[in-house]
Structure formats: C-alpha cells, structure tokens
Length: 318
Image 1 (cartoon, rainbow, N blue to C red):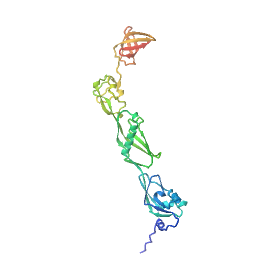
Image 2 (spheres, one colour):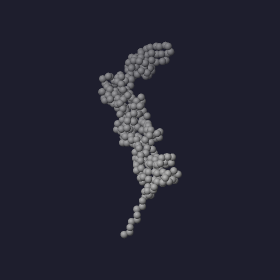
Image 3 (cartoon, rainbow, N blue to C red):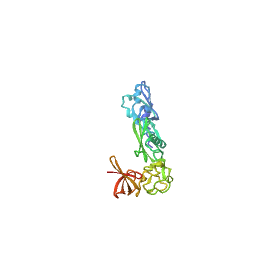
C-alpha cells in the first residue's frame, strides 16, 4: 500500500512558529472582532506591537469591507496579509494568531413598534395642520425590524397625501451622519376619531333641519370629505339631498334655506343713486339671500329680476 504524503502546514501556521527578531513588529490576529464603520482596518482585527508610529500606520490600513450592519463576515488571515504585504510598513512583520477572523458589525435595531412611534411623533409635530381629533395608525404593514449603521441617526417622514389626513402610507427616510442609509415604507390606516353631526332620522331633500333630528357621534373623519363638527352649523340648514338616519352629515349635504318662498308677498325697492322707490311684488320662485329671482310687480303685473336682500325684501336697480 502506497504511503500517504506528509500533511503540509498552512503557510500562516509556519509563520506563527517563527521567532520574533529584535525590533520586529508583531501582528496577532483575533478570532473575533467588532466594527462600527463600513471599512475594516488591521487595527480592528489584530493586536500590533510594539506601540509606535509603525504600529499606528499598520493599524490604519484598510483590509476589507465591513459586513452589513448587524451581520458577520469571516476573513482569512492569509488574504489580509496578501492585501497589505506590499505596503512598506508591512515589511518584516511577524504574523501570529488566528487564521480566520469572524467580524461583526454593530447596528442600530429599529423594530415595528419604534416605526409606529416615529409616525406618532410626526403626527404630534403636525397637529396644527390637522383637525382636532384622536389619531390612530392601525393595520400596520411594516418590516418587523430594520438594522441601521451606528452614528448620528436622523429621519424624516413623508405621508402619502400632502394634507396628511387620509394617508395610507408613510415613508421614513433614515440618515446616519447626514448620509441616507434606508428608506422604509410603513403602510396602514390613519384613523382620525372626532364627534361629527349625524342624522337621527331620515332627512329628505329640502328639509330644514331641527335640533331633535341630529346628534353628535364619534366617527373616523379621515373617511369623510368635509364633515360638520358642530350642531350649530347644521340646525336651521336645509338638506340639499336626502340624508339617511345614522349618516354623518357633510358640508356638501347642506345649503341655506330660502328666505323667500314662491308666492310670498315681498317689498320691492327700486334704487337709482340716492333715490329709492318701493312697491309690492309676488315671488315667482324660492330665493336665498344674494340670489336673483323673478318677482311680479303687483301694480304693473310685469316681472322683474330682483336680488334677495332679506326675508320679504328684494331690490332692483334701474
């Protein structure tokens, strides 16, 4: 049977056996190392002695790119040596220690709860742009965790809608030391809960709303176009369309009721400069303050177009 060839020691193992000559610099690789930045230097992964200018020069040499924040990377000592062997400071160095180095990069962990807090802080900072309401960001879809580089961490938040209310997502741009490192989108439903005027009975089109026909109830105003937030702004108004019981009332559902009804006797004021002449007329249709309506002059039986000034009063210039 043919004998097996003798096992060859790795080159680094041979180097480790060499004695340290007087004045030589010794580099001892660690088995593990932790870094914070994007680059790995020789000083991050090894002890260099004796201390001095040459040791400082060697320690500052870049030997590899760091892994992503929060992750590990294995470096081969021989690869590191090969990368810097032509550097003048590396001449005559005695290499010792581990032949593999596990490098871990520190990171800042941002979990889903922290993302929610960032959005809540953004909403709090922008309350002057929002209606008075209780805000809740629910049904959140976001990464369970993101890991960012260490350093001076800042962020900015951009809602999917400039007016904020009704936004279905928020984009969070993270920067470390002024450099953009991550853009994270958080999706969900922004609720804005506030008391709004609500019909307690069916209000047919043309109904002048009375106090016992409306109440205030808590609703998500983010789903409403222009909700009415006070009963004072509803009572006495006229329904522009049918509003069903339980429905939140919006401004577009309302209009001012006529101050003059079709068939009403009205006082017509004919105005020309300082001269004012009055006569009696009959409204040919309903009219609200400021509207122009046809009015029949009782004296002449002719129709004239008049502006509605107040209940029972119209005017025309001639």
